[in-house]
Length: 427
Image 1: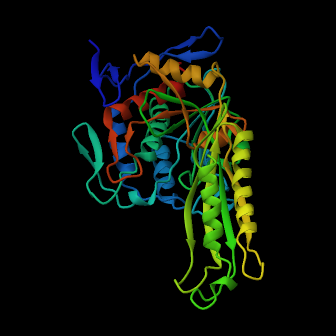
Image 2: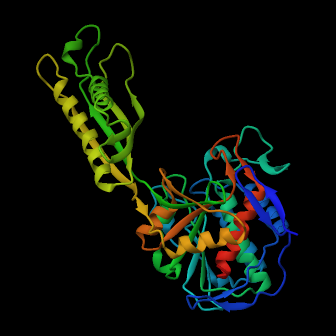
Image 3: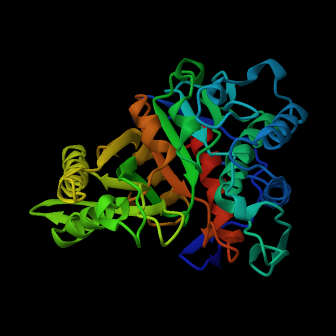
């Protein structure tokens, strides 16, 4: 009899078996060869994720993680020559140890090429994590560190699928397994991926944060800004009128943006986005009129044209404030603004094959999929820019980027089962 496993997010039906029976190839209604659903060894998967969580690997320092993945693949029978790195780390703002890790398997059954991916890096708060099982969850034994399940749980789910196929010689369509670098500091691995090395996938599946039933089919676009406000220093007690306060310029600009509805949640008619002034630094002493302030800001929207409108309003507000603040001799300050597109917005079509396949995998486990659109960036943003339709699924991570981070084991097992179904083309 099937049993019911309760997670903190959903109710999941599980057979409780490891599925060692030999899969049989079938032909789907679309003319694509597929195999009967198979089950991963979930005990092995749990051991694997514990090992991965214990490996340090901040953004730009993913070398140890990549070597562990490579060792696991080779031990399971992978051709070492099929496991390669691209040179993405030579093009990222942060010079890294290694590029994106890529492992390709030629197909043994007919079907469009598929890609499974999850980023290798973690945020600094997770350095030194000591993963332990605590009931139905995994946590860090060190209360001062996060766990790093974002995204080692995703790495483990994708790696589990690859290892099961290798160990059990499971039939599968052409596959690419892809572990990007430097996701946490700006999606740089996916952005700078050498697309020609990925095997031309037609369906792609990215595992990242959230519950296993959540399927993220779209995400916002984000633009980052650095704003330098230049004033003129003078003695604040003896001759403040001779100075131009960069702080005053910045304050006026920010106040205008807040008052006019261009800061925070931005809603103008049917258009919607967000903006934020996140960092302000400047000044050395109270008796000096501040001559320089540096600001870091951002603007986001699912609508590229409206995001550009938000950016323009920020630029206009700072330019206007610089004109308004003058010294006694009518000198004015100036503003320099530099911006970078972090990631472009995307929204997959409702009938995109990767969505249909992901939902089919969840339905096969008795789970009702939940489609979602993210207000944050994902590696999938850049994969879709590269022309690779990519849907993102969760792995059971709870409270990522905090010392309270946990990994729900039952939910993680669902992610592993879904990954293997998608990799073998059984859905």
